[in-house]
Amino acid sequence: MKEKNSAGYNENLVEMNHITKVFHKQRAIDQVSLCIPKNCVYGLLGPNGAGKSTLLKCLTGMLRPTKGEILFDGYLWTREDLNHIGALVETPPIYENLSAWENLKVRTLLLGLPDSRIEEVLKVVRLTNTGKKKAGAFSLGMKQRLGIAIALLNHPKLLVLDEPVNGLDPVGIQELRELICQFPEEGITVLVSSHILSEIEQIADKIAIIVDGRVHYEGNISDGDNLEALFMDIVRKATREEM
Image 1 (tube, rainbow, N blue to C red):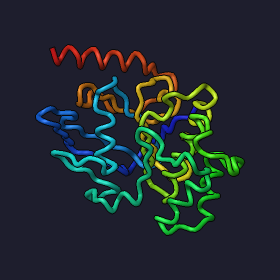
Image 2 (image 1 turned 45 degrees about the vertical axis):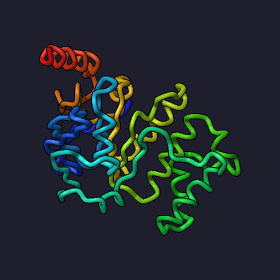
Image 3 (image 1 turned 90 degrees about the horizontal axis):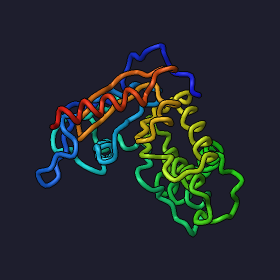
């Protein structure tokens, strides 16, 4: 289990202020405000359809918020900040007919990075021994790790992971958990969205719980906290408020 950071935080890497996203008069997220500290693992929790992925897409430039503002590292977010954000949202963006090294080479050419960076990220995600094996023949866990390697290429300050353990077997989940927990020590803040409470409980320093597009809880968690009980209590209260 991850040793939680209990020292507190002085700075936030990301601040979301009253973020709202409307699709055809339907509010997917409504007045969401969050503070994500530097060098932590931040868990974004909520039932399916709560608005987690929509919020992540606003942060990673895939969607434009209808209202509200995002601050990144103390400044108003612009698309230039995507140079400092790595993301794995939904499925890994890999070419299945290419090897892991070749997949990363495509991106280094686009980013103007040296081949040495390929070796560095392959080592981080433990894919150095895959050789010429095509990515299409990888296990789900290996594909997820390759997706993370792609997200790490540009030395991001923030790594965004949307439901990263979906479909993984226990071995793949354990490998991914260990990988995520090491990133804050390397100066990378991790924002993880999930509906699997047990995983977030083991890796997160701070969490937010979103229900029906609104934040109903944000706070630090520590060893011994009963996240399932907290989550169910928040969801029940939120559901009663909506009735």
